[in-house]
Amino acid sequence: MTAGAGDSLEDLRARIAAIERDIDAGSYCPGPWAGVVRAVRNAPDAQRGALAEETSRVSRKLHLRSGRNTISVGFGIAIELAAVVIGGSLLAVALGAGSSVASIAAMAIWAIAFQPLVKVAAGMALGVGYDYAYLYGIEPRFKMRFGSYLAEPRWKRILLHLSGMAGTPLGVMLVAMAAGAKLPVSALICWAAFWIAVAINVVSLVVATLGVRRLGPFRADDTSGGAAGIELREALRL
Image (cartoon, rainbow, N blue to C red; front, top):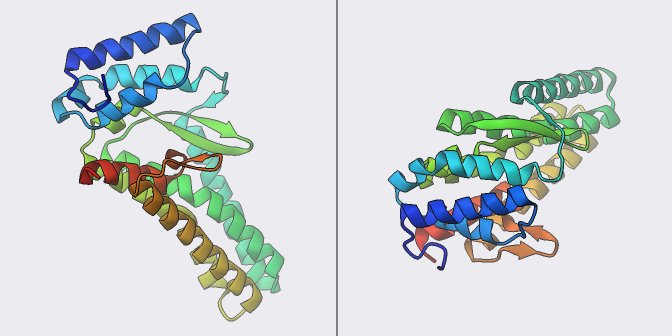
């Protein structure tokens, strides 16, 4: 059955259960889950809500198949907040000593730390839960409780991804504004980084809305802009 072709609740539940059996047996191959997610994402509100527990559980199993080491959401947020403090301290040093290097380092840290903090805060405000965090290198990433995300209405899901587009430009912009006339070279570099971040977000949003699901090795839903574009395209029935 084609995803989104009017699957009943029982059909979707059966498809999810089949995927879970394959995961448990170690025989799952990529493909079926993406189709189920598209179908659930476009299902009526009542169906999405009824499937929240199953979709969260299976999404969690898929995500943990690679043996990721997880940490609590609170600990992940604490790491990001510590990074914000470190970035702020570097910025204070930069402004006090006139150091462009320190201000650019602060920009890099805030560009990384602000994105998940803004998105997770927005997600929690919109009713989306989070299962755990995990380390991608040294950076925490946050795993949504996927069923709670899918259960939310479309406008909330789009708003969540749009918030994810704001964090990095916000962190960069704050450093650029603080550097100002005191560190003109640093400010110029920060503003350039700001516009690059904005452009990447906007391009990913536009191409995903137009139906492009992959650019080279990158999938559209790997970025917040791309995920927002996918949701927007489906909402507009393009």
